[in-house]
Image 1: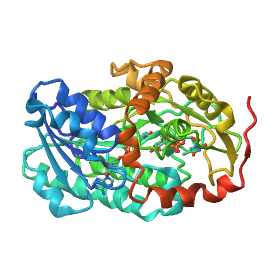
Image 2: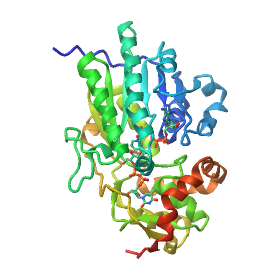
Image 3: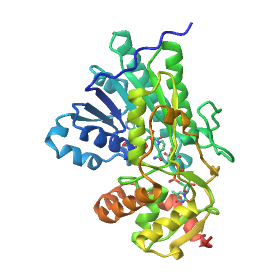
Image 4: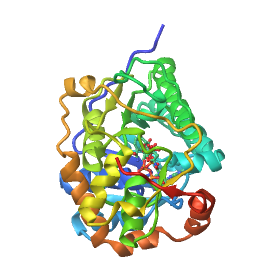
Length: 363
Ligand code: NAD
Ligand code: DAU
């Protein structure tokens, strides 16, 4: 017999542990929730990998009222000692922490597994230990549309089988399977979200949109993989963060919710549009060797999330304009993000590709 699901309603104001809260989407979530000024308290646990950046929380930390409700802890979700010390007095854990870049997972998969599997296990054990003490905490696992694999036709539903095809998406699938298994086995209050390709301010410059925008600002080459006809469904970061908060508050224990962007486009089309906003020419685009195992298309059905009462607010045209303009206005931020291992990663990922690149035909 399955254990009874624990209650899922968060107290108001709530105390939330946000792991990976110094990254792209996690920091947007923290900024948005704290700016409501409704008393919610947040502890951020972040390892500050190359992708984590304290500056992403600067707006909150410079506001006295919001800063008083934020605690920042540098640490690893795979470290049970650190995690254990943070669990008392927590009403919910929202787990954004992950290695998030598919190309890096192809170069070096191990960190993806440690954070995506062991890290999730450590967090779930800590939530289970709280339940055993009679202190309920809800666990939200932030997952991705990539767990469905390449979707040649139609739109993935939450009940579809998972078919991940990269070390990144395989680790993400493992993480969410583990989370649901705790719900079934121990009655842990778990919800899972599967978000689509997210873009917006503070996006690390390794990903398609910020890489191409920042390279184009410098009149550098834009390395388009293969024929550039791969399709992604673009979701503005504020909508992704808002949908996660909505599921945290209203999601049914044990359930999984797709978060589509409702803006499916071929990569070429995205590049055309960002170049138009920047006023830069297509001649910067180079056709380079494809990503191994490159998923052709992601597309999800959003009816379950709609039925829960969530609607995205930002169109792709508005979101892209705001994003491109943010990168133009925040050059110090993205130049700093291209430090540390950036150059060696860039040379490894793009050096030979760009040396062998050809002109990318238009259209
Ligand atoms: P990101 O790489 O910008 O941020 C990840 C954050 O996690 C960083 O701050 C990093 O320092 C931290 N982190 C990494 N390993 C850690 C560890 N072991 N312990 C503690 N902190 C650790 O990623 P993102 O794009 O903001 O993605 C956040 C989450 O959303 C990830 O789980 C990702 O799989 C998921 N997701 C991302 C997208 C997208 O398009 N970006 C879409 C769907 C789902
Ligand atoms: O779909 C959700 C996923 O979206 C998230 O789970 C991941 O964390 C996130 O990184 C993102 O994965 P993608 O691999 O789709 O995103 P990326 O920005 O790396 O690539 C988007 C598309 O652009 C993809 O088809 C590959 C292509 N691309 C990417 C880069 C970095 C290029 O053509 N050239 C590039 O240099």
